[in-house]
Image 1 (cartoon, chains in turn cyan, orange):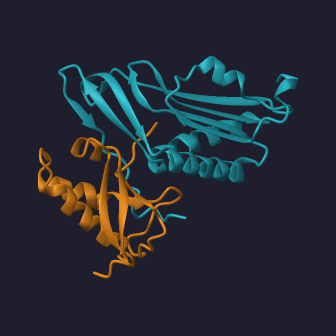
Image 2 (cartoon, chains in turn cyan, purple; image 1 turned 60 degrees about the vertical axis):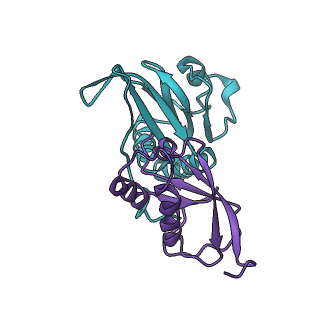
Length: 156
Length: 98
């Protein structure tokens, strides 16, 4: 890992409309002493439940989304190591098929913690973070996808 | 209604609610001390009579029932009382990011 990456903020969260460039995202990761970085990039698929998708719009309540993502990342650090560095970006607005909607990067000393923490972050993001998606179909119809209800999740 | 206990509150709507109320915002008059769960009933009363409402009432009921209210820092529990301290309430339907 590059020496210039010493002191990278342990948790970095961004929720905004800026396009996510995987190369740029990856180059900001890493920490001196870490030998592993696990990345997850989620992109808009061209089919969902048998329907051809042309685009997806992401809506977010950004203040609480960022706060919830930060909490999720801190939970991951408590579980898999306080030395983990975790970056998460989620894009909002209308995205075309193939565009990256979410990026997660976890840097750790060894690979096992990086893999497990990154999996944890994406799974919790889908259940807890106030972000919603609307699909646009080739026949012109649109649909907000059903999701996970936040009621009954034992809020802190 | 004691006017000192009633407040005009900005309510922000997200996700599927944006198809119902495209501006994504409405104003509700809320009495201090109202249970958060009861605020969801007030919300339904505001939405059900909207011109151009396409969602059947039963679906609107389900959507509101499955949603939570929040302020900028946390989700509010249905059984807590609205204090009037929050200038804005946020309606969060079931989430599906990623």
